[in-house]
Image: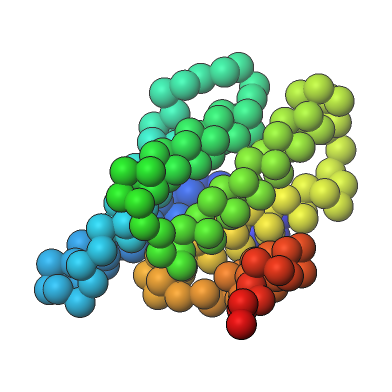
Length: 177
């Protein structure tokens, strides 16, 4: 629990909320000055900013007793749904879109596993999974913020996706003579 001890639970939450807010403002600026005219990145960063603001500890309106992790999982599922709706409306994606959907999906799985560990199995003794949870979720949140700002394939996920797609269906990528 080094991160939580160092920064505190609320300051990390505020940091990520601030990060998504700054990513949104950056994308508004880039759109306004005309460097990027695509609205997908702008809408995606708006959805992420709204999601992290609404799910912040200070604005938890959906209160399910003793299930903060379940609440966060539900917020992430709703955010994934909102991002998919934006994609369906705009019909385009950006390199950051994959990072957002994949990151939120992984976070959702971790939140559900923490909910099961604490509420269903009633585990209250610290074990290695809690450390993995803290570092993974925070690293994914930072990666999503960076992906929204730089809008590049920073970890090579798109290359990996294309390589897997080629391995699974090699005839789709071969050129016909």
